[in-house]
Length: 308
Image (cartoon, rainbow, N blue to C red; front, side, top):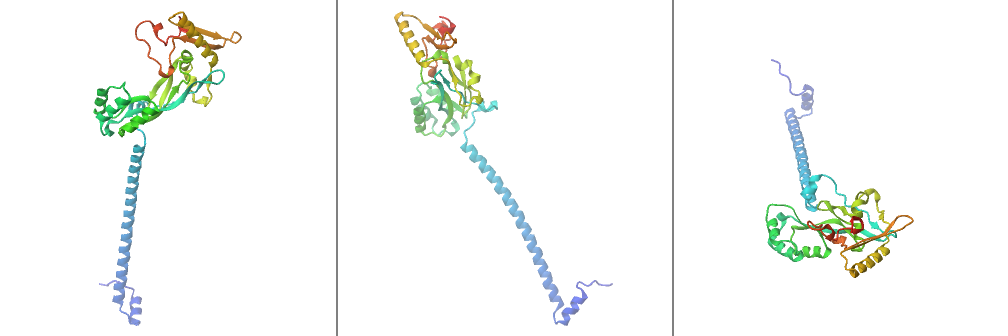
């Protein structure tokens, strides 16, 4: 049987001629190869651990980022979120023929509750009744201690009311910014303007829609995003409108009349300069329509166009 040499014979002879031990050299070479293999295996293991660590770090970072976004963002009101459509709250101003504001927008806040986050629901309900006397205490307590996760409390609150609610200090009482319609002249030209209310609502916005008068008749135009900052200009003259309403109210009192109406037009152009109907109302706090009786008894009844 012929044995295959483990080392080249020339290498062995050369080592012996130099007085070295070939076996010792071979053992040293084997040890060096083993150490090299061990180092390579360790580097591969460290590389795998590094990749695994980076993967875990990215996963935890994504979870942390998602939790931060959820904590910092306003929760979506269920009904509004279910619609899937974006709520557009923008609405153009309305001015008279001279550019004086008849209707504009005002940024305000809504008030809602998230009962799971409330610390003391009973105390919160009691404090809210002091701020909003029209609310029902027992109903609030039932809602706050029930299973619901979202409750509308007030669609629109004043800055003073917002501060009072903030002072309650309950983390489950939250505010949502929104636009509301403001009529700076109060009752003046109320039947012409009509009024606006809220349509689709979300936590951070609400759709403002016209419910009567010019606000309803030209609702689509007023809500058109393409208008930009261009107001809707009416043919009314605010000064003339105020004078007509003042004279009309005096005549109504003098005659002890149930109501009165007046329309003033430009005979050359047909433009309506003034249109008044009494009794009137404040569109900032528009009353509810009558559900029974004579509609003419309601201040919402426009005698100038609906009859006397």
